[in-house]
Length: 212
Image (cartoon, rainbow, N blue to C red; front, side, top):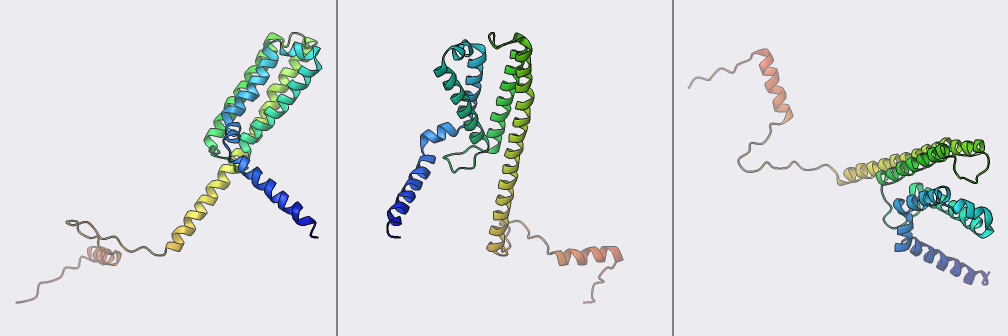
């Protein structure tokens, strides 16, 4: 059992370093939705609108690098939009939804360009290129709608927790004392007195003056 103590201390130390890394500036830059959108869309547009696709066909190293970039960029984008890790200055729901809309528009535009221009030039039969463009368009829409649903669910839960905290804080504060009106302003009549006035107005009761 004593031999497990150094291992446990090492794991705790590594966990501390990991938490510190999540709060660091480089991770905050990578977790920014703008960075994820640029890396995701930039890689796709460079692949299909430049000679990168043809170079990947003739070089195993370029082919592997392209696949690794696409996979990591997709994971980074998903993490930036729906991640729950305690990173530094995580943006709100509006910023993440805006980044998601921009990414969706970029994907749809690229899919239409591939279909209209029969891209990539060395990508096989034109029918296969059209099928790939349609798959990018419709499957991408399904994924983007699912991500948007997750973002909205996170926003709903966060709003509910904030409302619960506010309610508990107001209940723990107890009943608040009435605030005195400023000088020169008459204090509002109590509700009971207003009720008596309304009843008197309905019955037409008038108080007769007493004889002096």
